[in-house]
Amino acid sequence: MSKGRRRKGLQINGMLLLDKPTGMSSNYALQKAKRIFEANKAGHTGSLDPLATGVLPLCFGETTKIASYFLNGDKEYQVSISLGTSTDTGDSEGKIIDQQPVGISQGKLDQVLPQFRGSYPQVPPMFSALKQNGQPLYKLARQGIEVERKARDVTVYRLTLDRWDNQTLDLTVSCSKGFYIRTLATEIGAALGCGGHVIRLRRTGLGQFTLENTVTLEELEAFSTAREREALLVPSDQALIHFPQITIPENLAVYLTQGRAVRPPEVQGLPENELIRMYSQSGGFLGLGILSEDRKIVPKRMFVSQ
Image (tube, rainbow, N blue to C red; front, top):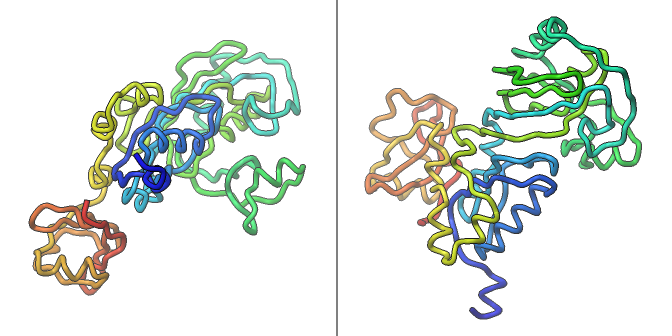
C-alpha cells in the first residue's frame, strides 16, 4: 500500500461495539481501532472514563453522522463503590479529600438506596467533559476552580444491590442519558454517612447493545484479514432500529438526496417532529428524516451510497 493511501485511509462504514479496557481513554481506544481498520474517519458515541470498561460504540465513515444520537440512549452499569473514603473526582483516580469510619447495615442500605431510584435532579461533577464558556469542567477542576453547575433531570430505572460488606457496595444501575455514576457513588456514600467512591465501573449496556455484542482490541488485532474485521461492523441503519422507518418511492428519494423535503403517499402512524429511518423502495438506506406538521419528510442526516 502506498504512503498516500495510508495517510488517506480506507472508506469503511459501520459501527464497532468495543469492549473498552480499563486504564485507557475512549479517544485512545478509538484511535487504536481506527489504526487497526486503517480507516479514514472515525468517532465515538460519548466517552467512558479511563477507569471504566465495557460497551463503547465506535463509528466509522458515514456512521459518524449518527454518533450524537447514541448519547440519548439508556445505559446500564455494574459499579463497585469503596466505602469510607471520598475523592475529588468521585473515583479511585482522584485525590482523597475525606475518610470516615464505616458501619452500615442491611437496614441502613434498605433505607438509603431507594432514594436514588426514579427521577430526580442530579448536579454533574466538576470532573466531567461538560463545558462552561467553551472550557471543559475537568480542566477548571484541575486548576482548583469550582463553578456552579445546573442540575439536570435524570432517571434511574433500576438500582439493585448485588453484594455488600463493610468496605464495598456492588450495584447494577440502569439509567437515562446524562447520569453520572461517580456522582451516584458520592451521594450514596454521603447518605450512608461514611463517603464513597467508584473503584470499578463496567458499562454493560447502551441502547439495544450489550456486552454480548462487543469485541476487544486484542480480538480485533488477532484477525488476519480486513474482511474478517469488517464483518464485525454493525450497519448504520441497524444501529438506529430504535427509530421508526418509512419507505420512500424512488422518484421522491432523489429529491431527499438533494436536501429537499418530499410528501410520501403514506405516512400513517409516524410521529411528527421525531427522527425516522428512510429507505428507498430498492432497499437502500437513505438516512434520517423528520415528519413535519404539514406531513412532509424533511431530510436531517443523509447517507451517501454505501
